[in-house]
Image (cartoon, rainbow, N blue to C red; front, side, top):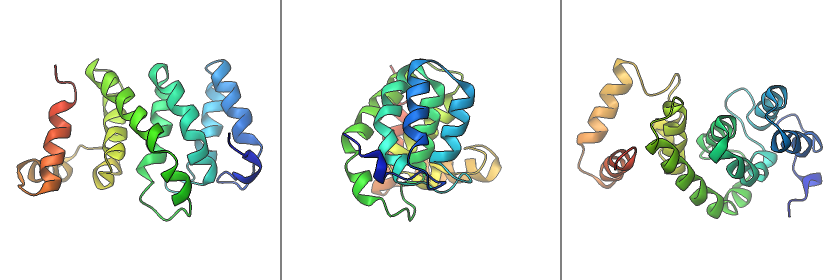
Length: 170
């Protein structure tokens, strides 16, 4: 059970995130998703204790919600940064494993939100450099780097090839 009184969001509030999560759990509410997004990921870069505390609830919504998949992915894309929440992130291991399965099933369906979900999967696999590329994994320079990562021979390269081979595969 999360003690929300200790889980400040990016605006240092402790009461809004649980309220917003309840709203999006009841119904798809665009305004609630928008506010939840900027409370959990500030300026597209910073996360807070509430970000990691909200992760299990977002992952529960993720199989049926593009907004939940996107927001959970954005939180995990910033997991390598300095957020002071390493203990909360460590408590999310089971949730992250569950999110990996959700993303894998979703990506096999060849969805319209493929890039967002693929970036989330890269973050789940701790490939933060590729997950956080501004504007996504496109553009000549990003693809050149992606291509060299694909061809490389060390452990990181092999993990990346396995990851890509499993996405959308049969």
